[in-house]
Length: 152
Image 1 (cartoon, rainbow, N blue to C red):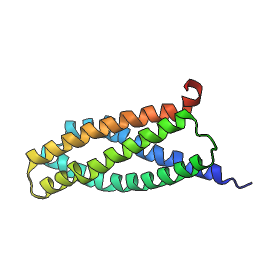
Image 2 (cartoon, one colour; image 1 turned 90 degrees about the horizontal axis):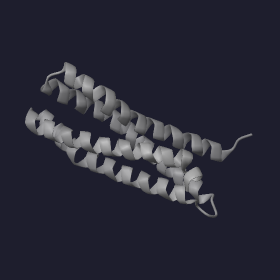
Image 3 (cartoon, rainbow, N blue to C red; image 1 turned 90 degrees about the vertical axis):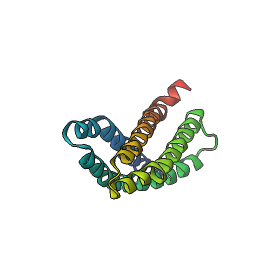
Image 4 (cartoon, rainbow, N blue to C red; image 1 turned 180 degrees about the vertical axis):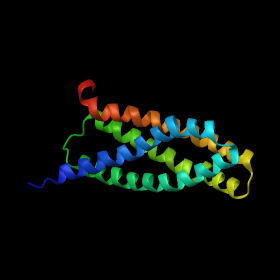
C-alpha cells in the first residue's frame, strides 16, 4: 500500500546522503588526492569543475530535504525536541552552503577564470573550512536524527 510518509522519508534520507556523503568524499578523499597529484592551477580548475556539478546536486538536495522535512514535521501534533534540533542544524547547514556558493565559490570561479592562482587558493581554503564545518554539523545532525529520540 502506498504511504506518502514513507516516500517523504525516503526522499529526505536520499537528499541527506547525497549532500553529506558528497561532502565527506570531497573533504576526506578527493582533496588529499588532488593535493598529492596535481599542481595548483590544475587543482583549482578541477575544483571549479567538481563544485559546478556537486553544487547542483546540493541545491536539489536542499529543496528535497527542506520540503520533505517540513511536510513530515507538519504531521506531528507535538514536535519532539530532537526534531527541533535536527531542523535547526539543517537550517544552519543550508545557510553555510548559501554563503559558500555566493561568496568563496564565486571568488574561486573568478580567480580561476583570470588565472589568479593565489586568490583562487585562498577562496578554496575558505570553502574547505566551511565544508569541514558543514560536514561536522551534518554528521551530528545524522546522529540526532537517528538516535536523538533515545537521548532527548
